Length: 529
Image 1 (cartoon, rainbow, N blue to C red):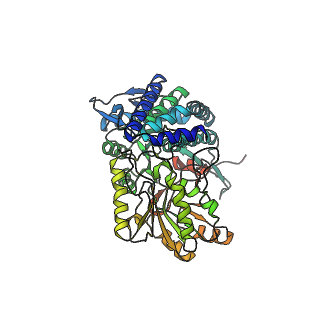
Image 2 (spheres, rainbow, N blue to C red; image 1 turned 135 degrees about the vertical axis):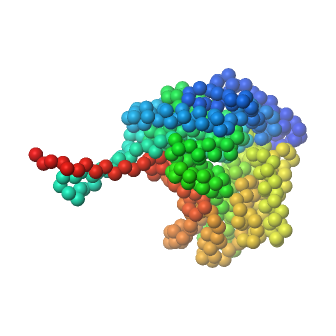
Image 3 (tube, rainbow, N blue to C red; image 1 turned 180 degrees about the vertical axis):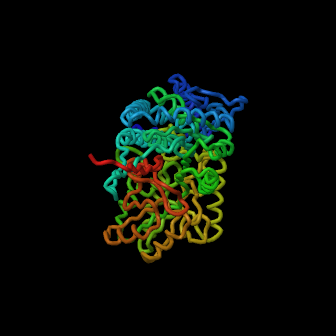
C-alpha cells in the first residue's frame, strides 16, 4: 500500500473534530510562513504604496475549511477607489509611452517571480479559497501563463496600412491602449482571473485598478507585491477591496476609467453593463454558465469516464468528474447538466457514481483530497435548494445528497438521476458539487436541451463519430465547445461566451483587442517630388 493511500485512510478514520484540529494547525503554519516571505499582505495598493482604509475600517478574511480568521484587510470604498483611479490615470502617460519591448521585459520578470513562488501562491489560494493544493498550484501555473503569453504579445501590437483611394493620401490604422481599466474579479479563481485581465491590459499600455473579491483578496495582494518587485511602476497596478457596491459605482462613474472587465455572475454583469453606459466605457464580461455535457451512445466510456483509480496514487482521474467537481463545482464552466443517451444511461450512471463515491473531501492541504469546502454558507444553501427542488419533482439521489460530516461548508459529492428540464437545476447554475443526469433519445433532442438556456459559455460532448462531432459542435450555441475532453482552458485560446454569458474574449491573441482602441489615420495632400 502506498504512503499516500495509507495517509488518506488514516485521515478517514479521524473524527471530524480531530480533522478540523489538524486543518487549523496546518493553516496556521502556512500563514506564518507566507507572512515571513512578505506575501501575506493585508493592505490595499494605491500608487505604489500599501494603504489602509482612510477611516481604518477592516474586513475579516476567513479560511472556509476551518472558519478561522486569516487576516483583517481594509474595508475600502469610494475615496480609496478615487485615489486609485487618479494614480492609474497619472501613471498611464508614462507607461503607455514605453515600447512594447520595455513593457514585455517587466511582465517577463513578473512571470518569473510568480513561478518561483508558485507553491507559496498555491498555499495562499488554498488557505483563503479552500480548493485542494494540487488544484491551487495548477491555478498558479495557468494564471502565470497569461503573464508570460502577454509579455510576448506586448511586442506584437500591430496596426495596418490601407491602400489609398487617392494618390496624395496615405491611410493607416493605429492601435492604442484604451486607458485606465477597472478589473473586477471573483473568488473562485483568485489568481488566474486577475492575471487573465491584467496581463493583456499592461501589455497594451493600459493601467489597472483591480477589485478582487472581498472573500479572497490575499492572493491578489501577493501577486501585486511580486509585480512591484518585478518593476511595475507605481500607479500602473492598483488593488482596492472592501465595499463592493461603492467600489464598482466609483469605477463606473469615473470618466478617467475607460474600460471595465468583469468575471462573475450574470446579474452583476448586467448592472455593470448598464452602469458603464453613462460614460460609454468599453466593457468585457465573462459571466455565468450552464454547461451541458452530451454523452452519445457511441462514446468511449473509458474516455468519458476514466473510471479506474491510478495504481500509483489514490487520486481519481476522470474527464467528466474533473469537469464537474473541480473546485468543488464552483467554476463557470463546470458540467452543470450531464445528458446521457438512453442506450448507455444506466452503464454510464453506474460508472460515474462509483467514481464520484471515491472522491475524498477535506482540507485542501491534506494528501489525497479531491474536494474542499464550498466558499460560504450561502453556497451550501443554494446547493440544498437545487437538490430539494429536483427531488420534489421526481429526481433521485444516486450518491451523496447531504452536508458532509466535516461540518462547516463541506458538502458530499453528489449525483442525482432522472433529472428533467422542469427542475431548477436544469435552468440555473448550481455552482456546487452536484452532478445531475438527464436521459435523451436523439441527437436533435440533446441539442435542443443543451441550447434551452440563456447561458452560452461552455459545452462538452463525447462521441467517436466525426460527422456528429462537427454537426453538434456547430449547432451548440456556446462560445466554447470541448469534444472528448473535460479540461480545455489554456492561455493560447479565446475564452468567452454567447448570449447572457458575456461579451468579449480573454486569452489568446484576440484578448489584447479588448484593451485597445483603433485609430484611423489619414495623411492627405502629400506632394509628389
